[in-house]
Every structure is written in C-alpha cells, then in structure tokens.
Length: 162
Length: 268
Image 1: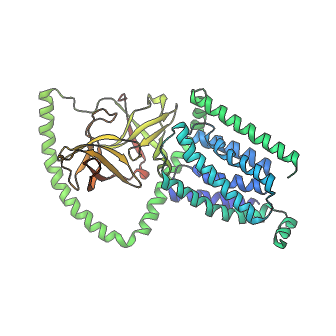
Image 2: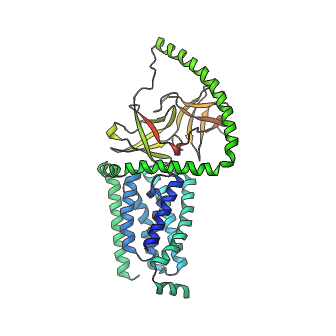
Image 3: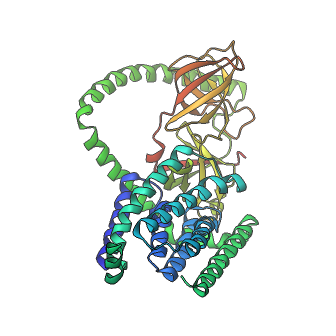
C-alpha cells in the first residue's frame, strides 16, 4: 500500500513538473477520481474525510470560492449513492462505469454549472474535454492499482468468478 | 448496501453539501479571508520554488523535443536579430525626439500609478486563463489593477487576498480589451480564443489592419493604459454578418513561463 501511494505521489509530481500547471492539487480530476474509487472500494469514511480536507485546501490554494470543490465533488456522489442503492452495483465493470459517470459530472458541475451560476470565470470547452479525457485514462489506471491494494482477496476472486 | 448504511451515507453527504454551501455564502461576503491568508503564508514559498523548477523542467523537455529544429530556428533568429539591431538604432533616435516633445507639451513620461514587482506562483492557463502571484492587499494591490511584463499587457487582478492574487489573463475569452493597430491605428476589441491566439473584432470596414501589424491597448474606456503590447496580427477576415472585420492576433509572449510580472497599482 505504501509503495503504491509513493508511486502515485511521484507520478503527480512528474505530471506537475512536466505540465507546469498550478500545483499538485490543481489536478481536480485526479482528486475526483481518487475519491470516487475509494468510495467504490468501500472506503467510504476515508473518501469523505480526504475529499473534504483536500477540496477545502484546493480552494484555498488556488483561490477558488471556498466550498466550490467539495460541492462539485459531492453532488455526483450523492446521486450515484442513490443509484447504487437502487441498482446494487457490484461488478467491476459497473464500478468503473459509475466512477466514470461520477467523475465526469463532478467536472461538469465544477467547470460549467458552477461558472454559470456564480459567474466564476469563463467556460473553456477544450480544457473541460481535455480534463474529462485525462480523468477517463487516469481512472482506469488507478482502478487497476487500487483494486490490487484495497480489494480483499475473496472479493477479487468472487468478481473473477462472475 | 443495507438501508441503515444508505441512510447514514446520505446524511453525511448532505451535511458536507450544506457545509459547502455555507462556506460559499461566507466567502461571497468576504468573511473567511483569514483562511486564504494563512494558506498563502504556508504555501507561497513552496509554490515559488515549485513553479521555478517546473519552468526549468519544461525548458529542458522543450529542448529535447525540438533538437532537430534548433539549427533552423537559430538561423532564423540571427536574421531577425540583424533586422532588430537596425530597428533599435532608429527607435533610440525616435525616443530622444519623443522625450523632448513630451517635455515641451507637458505629457507625463511614464505610466501613471505605482509599480509592484511580483513572483508568479502558479498558472492555470489551460484551465481558466489565470495565473497567481505572490503579492496582495498587504502590498496595496487591489482588484482591477493591471499586470504587465515589460511593455506587454498580461492581465487584470481578478481576486485579491492579503498575500496573493489571481490574475485573469488577456487571453481570457471574456477579456474584451479596447485595442488599436500600431501602424494603421484601426480600433477594435480583443478577446482570447483557444491556445495562444486572440481575436480582434469590431474593426470598422474602412479601417486597415495588416498582417504582421502589432496590436496595442488603446486605453479608451479600459483599465489598461494606452500603448501596451497585446500581440501580432496573423490573419484578417471580413465578417459578412455585420460588415465589420476581424483579425486573428498571436500573443508574442509565453504566459506559462512567466516568473516575474509587474502590477500597476492605482489604475482601477
């Protein structure tokens, strides 16, 4: 687990240095993905605490309106929790699909709806699409990584049997 | 997920959402500025360092990527350099003449307002056309102040805290800066587009804009003082819908690699 976290952190630092974008936490999509995955791997409490602290820090550092990130993160999680209760998402494919939907909606809320409602900067469609594409790729990679770390052996073998 | 777990989760998520909305409301009335200040004090030195390193790594990666093009670029730059030497010599003469004329007419020599130097601590150009700098209210910077780099217009202070500020760049699609051509004096409005390009619009049909012409701020009904460089015209198109012309303008400065900028205070 520690090695995996170190690897993930190193990859974020490299991303930061290569892309020359604002700071590590600027990767809102990265945060969204991680929280979603933790959530779908049944690490609910960690997901809530981490996302709240990280979201608030992100807003404070990049001078976003405070609460914007947590708001954007949790609306999709609220909706997908509701659907999860109805549909009982258990298979690997469904988990990834739900995470993808959740991450895409979080970006949509943060970059489109939020900016329209609060008039907080302009909407740059290319940047939003790019962010969503990055999210998709990162989500799949992290899903595989976290599956190895967080899922119990029995659960994994059960999924394979299905 | 059983019903009780579901209920608990929905309750926690709802609480987080309510707290978020409360924070948004408090922020909108400026009640939590101290939190931003504490965060800035704790993170700005680290971010200055990180931004410097990011620029260096980018430069290094850029060289590796362009190694085959360097010779060609070098030859091109040598030619440009020779041409620029000639222009500098002419301009020096013109500057002396201009200074003398200004003295006689009583026109102030420099841009009005105090100038503060600032370090760029991060950029979010791809995401929302903004950068952050390490000066704020404690340095008398206020919302609406103009940010420049030499004679280049960089942006406007959009949000200001005690120790840092967010700058909305001229390349923002909502910037709408009144500008004019340097050579033919055609007036228009400029705003950002995708990438490093900007679009100058509302140019009247009778006005002339040429490819390669430098576009400057006009200073008319704008926070930007007159004469700051915006970019160079790359193409001109006629707009048949309202009979005006439009010009595509390329910005001549790499905004993602800025390390120092200057804030002109007291312009707003």
